[in-house]
Length: 113
Image 1: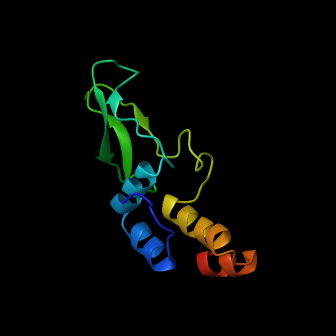
Image 2: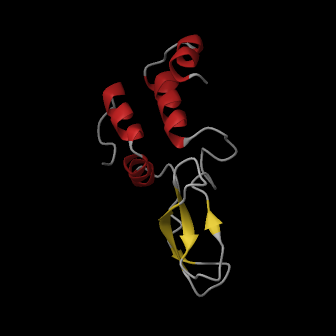
């Protein structure tokens, strides 16, 4: 689902409607990092994408070692770092502001942010 042509708003809404689609799109387009690989905390486990209901996105990078509680947010080292908004809200907002150049007041009305 890499971005080979300009997106339209319908496509953005479709991508942001499903967390998995959004995360895949963001990873494929190098907008968030993939932390998959050896855990740098316990060294015995691997970081894999896991369901996590405690996060806005419903997923997180988490160590497979049951004794290790290491988790990495999708926001880490990305454009999204430090934001309290979900990745879907940020993606929609940026599309409206940057791609089609809507005035900030309209974006505020459409997204609530």
